[in-house]
Image 1: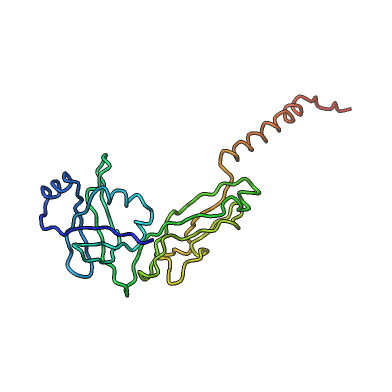
Image 2: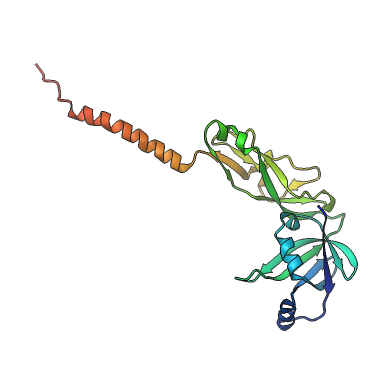
Length: 217
């Protein structure tokens, strides 16, 4: 998905200048990497609705800065504590021949046919919702699919089990052993089963206690 947004460079700095920008419906920001950092500002409403799209957070973005287009990544943004207002945003320039590190969302599929769910009534628990990866910009995926179709009860899928796209590798220490998802019987169901078993055993225990002992001859 190609995502493009427009920005203009700015020279005014400081809290007062940023406050004035926000009041005029603009968002102060910065683009860094490659050359000198560039101070920018963008239209608030366009940016706000772009931030609500999953792909905006894990895609190479095209930034039209003063009529010149460059490739960037979203690196950080700040929201107002209680208003739906973007306060500031950071972008990083992308170089085609240098690997980037990104968090990419995980999309879980086939949970309904997982043996642990279909046959044993288990529930899938998503331990991870995104994955740190490293790749060249051209290989950056919008998301990584997690196939749950073979996941059995009380079993897990690990990062090492994922089929990563060509040119993409998981990043992080011991990331291969990290659990992505698991299937378990809900805790409430386990407790209910234990209570039912205890209740079923209670009458038998009561009868045994009430039965008179055999008299010795």
